[in-house]
Length: 196
Length: 102
Image (cartoon, rainbow over all chains, first blue to last red; front, side, top):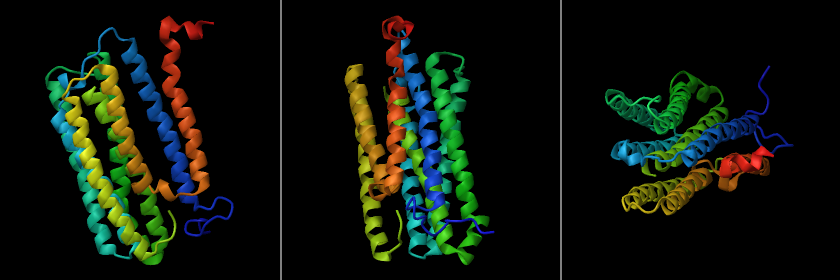
């Protein structure tokens, strides 16, 4: 039995099921990160002193990572636009670039984390580092998850393009929505943790 | 976003490039402003304002929220309401939790 409303629009919602599904999932993600941001506000406002992020964290590396993630959002949306214009080869290039940029983000984060550990700075050291590692760690898991889905669509999942290109285009749009959300979260994490 | 008219997609691509340039410029602005070491309330307000503009650009154009269906707006309106409520929960703890002690 075929999965219903993957390509055709449901009359009652005006959307495909995949589109409404990914937005409901993103709504739950907003609440997940929202709870952690609320915890950050609570811990920070309750602390007698709070360090400026740039006295502990590496701002140039984080700025570089912000540029990397924003660029990956552009390549992601260009991957979808390529499919919408029926250019599969270009899609592969843009999607490959998106995955690669996600990898660059993780490598930079690895160096940031390992430098902190070498300096004896751990989540247990103080509240600032606890919330820093929790928020960036959870965000990193999302980057890894997004990369895995994108890699699937770049590789084995791309077979769907031959049999049902419109469904495949929709799937890439949905994985793109998740990837942009990951970028959006970082846009708020960067000033909150590193610059204030 | 639904419908994949090639001419429309071409127009979208131009918008994506413009948004990309704007996001890069705003990222640089965020970092430069942080170097002025402004008082915390002002620094927080400016940083969050710039981040909100950047986030809105990503949501509106990369996530196509500027031209979405009503149901998605309804879902997001509900989400935003609960998200704001969540962020204001710490306010209840001011004055040693006077507002929640009863």
